[in-house]
Length: 166
Image (tube, rainbow, N blue to C red; front, side, top):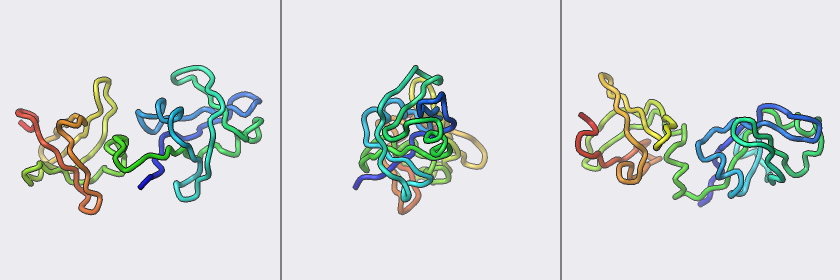
């Protein structure tokens, strides 16, 4: 089952030829904007397909030109809309979804560690901030530790390495 995942939000029109600035909503933004089928809309349900024509510049100064947006007026009509990438259910982007905030975090042996309070984008790897009411734990989001997400139970399952929860 494929799902639309928000990767960016159009923040402003740039220039006269339909270019826009986009604020990344995921660390995967740069990769996914070029490699995945895109949609745009206020929500995933109301979104329509979108095709990237050209990226101008790099990093935070990038501007994007999308098919069908020919001038500044067209660009202004998409300000505030989200850009979604079509991903499959096994895509690793699901592990860094803000939808997971508030989920319970459990070891693979069933021990409750705490609630997921935040997700940090760190240089080496992303990390979950888990709060148990007294302490906070930083859990690296790597396949060796984060095993699965159970959406129906609102739970994240991990296999902690030695010393991770001390």
